[in-house]
Amino acid sequence: MKSGPIVIIEDDADDKSILESVLVELNVTNKLVWFNNCPDAFHYLKTTSEQPFLILSDVNLPGQKGISFKKQVDEDPELRKKSIPFVFYSTAAEQKTVNEAYTEMTVQGYFQKKSDYGEIKQDIKLIIDYWLACKHPNVK
Image (cartoon, rainbow, N blue to C red; front, top):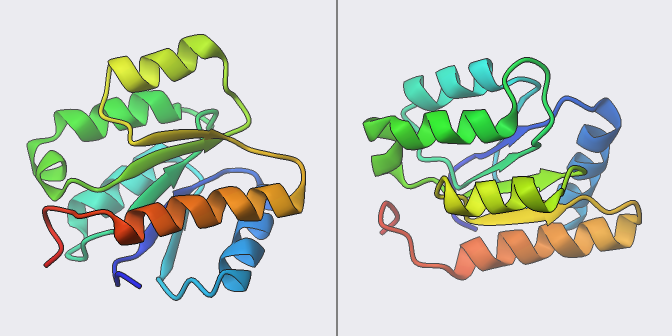
């Protein structure tokens, strides 16, 4: 497993609990760094010396929305240089939002949350496996 932390921005306690269970069942050993809002996640990304493995973000978050947060990350030269894979994982999947995610920023994936635990596990496994296999500019 690539060693960087997985940053998860999720404000729903039930979704957080499900994601934790899925990641444990998938034997994901990366440290999980949780945030329930975008400003705290942005501060972490700006101040951590660790190279995150992946960012999973909800779209509908209190205050600053996930789309706005991703634009903020993209506009920051230091964070762009880190090239952290960014995947939206959200209940909200209106076509307009999906289009905006792919055409106005550098999002690397957009997954709609499923209600079935097995399907959630399958999606998270797909995301993790893809980024484990993918070449990355900041991982040797």
